[in-house]
Image (cartoon, rainbow, N blue to C red; front, side, top):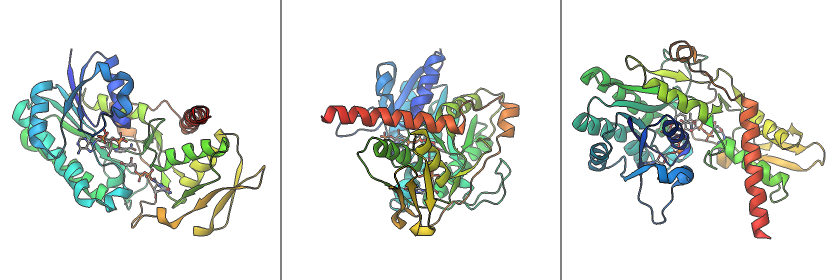
Length: 342
Ligand code: NAP
Ligand code: F7E
C-alpha cells in the first residue's frame, strides 16, 4: 500500500483526487486548516477514510510534521489561494501560500523523505497574455495577476528542486477545470448556480464581468487522473493538461441556460450587454463592471498532445456534459433549499 499526502484536500481537485487514490488502494493523508467551525469541505462524504493532519502551507514546521506522520510516497500539492480575482486584494498572502508554500513543501520533503514524488498544481494562468496559440509546454510565460505570478514561482522552484537535488518533482500545467464541486465564486459555477435559481424562480438575473474572455474548460475528474499519471512515470517532467477547445464566458452562459431549458439571446455591447429569455423576454443576464479585473487573461487554449502521447491521458467528459452535469447538480441543490424553506 502506498501513502499519499494531498494538500488542498478539502478543495475541488483534492476531493476528486482523494476518491481516485482511495479507489487505487492508497492510504490517503490530507492537510486540514484549523477553522472556528470544523468543515471538511468537498471531502465530507469520505472523511472517515482520510487521515487528516492539521497544517498550513505558510508553516514549514507543520509541513515537516505532516511528512513525518504520513511518510508519503507521493505528495500532491493542490493547496492554494486559487481565486484569481482575490489575488489583487491579498497579493502577499497569495504569494506566501502559492509561491513560498511550494518551497516549504519541497523543503519538508527534502528533509524528511527526499525520495517521495512531488506533484505541483501549476496553471494556464502562467501563460496570461499568451505568447502562442494554442499554448503548450514550450510556450513562454506572461502571468497577468498576483496569482499567476505566484504560481510561476511555484512552477520554477519545482523544476529547480528537480534539477538541484534530483528529486522526482514535476508540474501539471492544468487549464481551467470545473465540476459540481467548483467554488461558487468561479464564473462557471456562479453561472450554473444562478441559472438554477432563475429557472426555479428564486432569482431574476445574474451579473457577470467580461463575457469575451475565452477559456479551455474541462472536468476536474478527468484532470486529477492526469495528476496521478504524472507521478507514475520513469522520470519527472512537466505536462500541459487541457482540451484544445476554447469558448467565451458568453458561450458558457448560453450553454448553461440551454441545459436548464431556457433559450437566451444577447443584445447590446460592452457594459450594456444583456441576455433575454427568448420565451418570456425577461432579462436574465447583465454585465456589471465591478466583476472586471485590473488585468485580464483574454484567451486560453491548451494543446495536451504531449500528455496524450506520453501519459496516455485522455479527457472523457465533453464540454456539453460538463455544463449539463453542473446545471443538473445546481437544480437539485436549489430545489432542496426551496423545499426545506417551505
Ligand atoms: P480550491 O477548490 O480553491 O481548493 C484550494 C485548497 O487549498 C482548499 O482545500 C484550501 O483549504 C487549501 N488551502 C488554501 N490555503 C491554504 C493554506 N494556507 N494551507 C493549506 N491549505 C490551504 O482549488 P482547486 O480548484 O481544487 O485547485 C487545486 C489546485 O490547482 C490549486 O493549487 C489551484 O491553484 C490549481 N489549479 C486549479 C485549476 C482549476 O481550474 N481548478 C487550474 C489550474 C491550477 P480550505 O478548505 O481550508 O480553504
Ligand atoms: O474566471 C471571467 C473572468 O474566476 C474565468 C482558477 O481555477 O482557472 C481559474 O481561474 C473568466 C475570467 O477563473 C465573471 O474575468 C466574467 O476571464 O472562473 P474564473 P480563472 O480566473 O480563469 C485557472 C486555470 C486557475 O488556475 C485558477 O485557480 O471569467 N468572468 N464574469 C468572471 N469571473 C468570475 N469569477 N466572476 C464573474 O462574474
